[in-house]
Length: 124
Image (cartoon, rainbow, N blue to C red):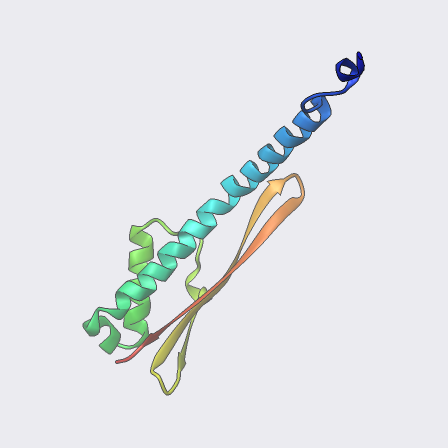
């Protein structure tokens, strides 16, 4: 008869604390990683935007790099060094590849390393 009263209902305090700790951990992770992903989106859009500027593409690799770095500077992207960009001539045209890593500290000596790669082909 009194069996239902003795059964536990709902989440225990330990479970609630564990859920809150996980939410805080993943929130911290997202808070630290989001700027790097936003910068990568700016790199991709800058590389694509230069592709539509025929006069810049006709100027060759130096002109393309100057335009991309100027666009990144305008957008306040300072975490991507210019030596992350490499040009390669292929049959399709001039291929520019952005290849870089971003390391962000999470908690004490725990870091997250994010690797970003994007390529665009420019046809002069």
